[in-house]
Image (cartoon, rainbow, N blue to C red; front, side):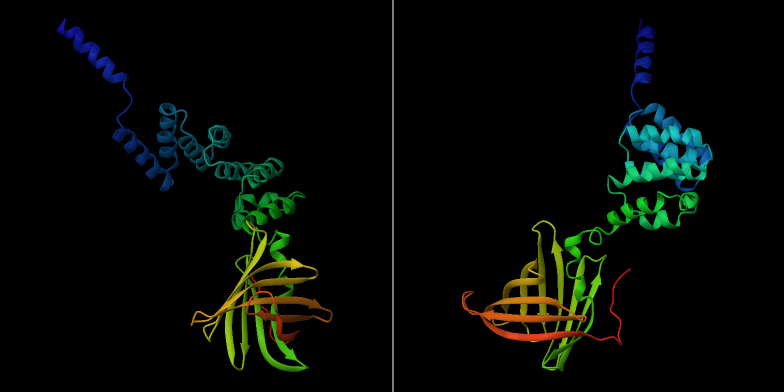
Length: 304
């Protein structure tokens, strides 16, 4: 009787899931093989993990990648498709599938995988441009279109018309009144066209500003900080043929005034800037009116 009980107990223990620590050890060993690119060992250990944990999408992903590394492409595609069904890092899976299809000369399926990945935000622009495994797709007629979608994910501001409304000011400018230069201003388009940095220099004042489009509010925001301690915080946007901002100027003493700033593109590569001020937000007076003339001898700074 005692022996029977012991046998039943042993059987029940054998049927229990592996203890968490053991499972972690198996996973760590598989990952060690994977990182060292020991593909036969990685295939073996991740295959065992998928058999014990069939609903674990990450294990299927790693199994598919290991099979890809081992050159077993048909099996890799099947494993990666299972990982995709389980929702494991879909953009990573689709990129791996695209690489395999491209290496096998199947540009159509490779581009389809990349195209599907763009729908969920795939943004690995430089990888797609430079990965040697994708060389076979770059002469395909669909490639430019797919690449442009990836670029739009990577640099969303570049693809957003409202975020480009201030581009006309990008460059290096002479600030003039009555034909005489009173200072210079440089507008740089940076961070994937998501911000515009302004650097005005006048004999009695220098500053630095940042302008950006806020998609949540549908407005532009401009913040300027000057070396005399003044801070200008404005909100606005493109309206009636000009960039129009309104807000407040505050100085280090806590004093403030209302301010309106308008940048109007003019013919002949010129821009007019006007600044109106008000103590109460009701009565306004013109405080600044200058024409920007582009300075040809010094190039603007714009990121590619």
